[in-house]
Amino acid sequence: MERSAGAGAVSAPAPVTVLAGPTAVGKGTVSAAIRARYPQIWLSVSATTRAPRPGEVDGVHYRFVSEEEFSSLIDSGQMLEWAVVHGRNKYGTPRGPVEEMVAEGRPVLLEIDLAGARQVRESMPDARFVFLAPPDWDTLVERLVGRGTESAEERERRLETARVELAAESEFDVTIVNDTVERASDELARLIGVRDLT
Image (cartoon, rainbow, N blue to C red; front, side, top):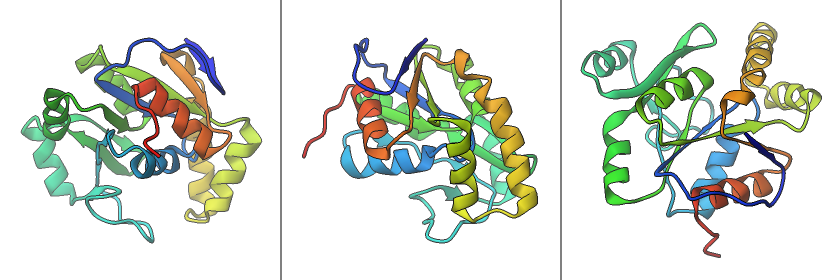
């Protein structure tokens, strides 16, 4: 595994790159930066049964679906991966759009949780798996508390989950340290094989 917080040699790009990491590490923020700065990278939109957070747009940040819709996608084999996250909400990646983009030769980025990454490794072993890590534990706690979207009980549950997720770093091909969003997103784009157009 290669651990990086800066420039370094990278091997040939994979058709699908999977980005995972502990809760509150900034996966969504880094993915949003990729969407804004590297439009040639297709960012998969996950489906979820959780309610939208303030400012989230259906079809852009997530596909917000009911429990029944989500179950139907699973039962019909339309989910590349899915999981129950933090013991309550389901998240998953619809298979069809990913396969369509790969067939078109467009670089694909999946931003998913650890359990989902493990499922994708089973079905897409040629994908590149990138672990997004915080600079340190205190920074991760600060980001989670600073977000202000969870109750104290939810924060504790997420921090416990984060401890388990951090221990899985060795399962990934490359680690990117999210010290700044710009640097982390640039490094991720380089791994995917794309340079900034601006």
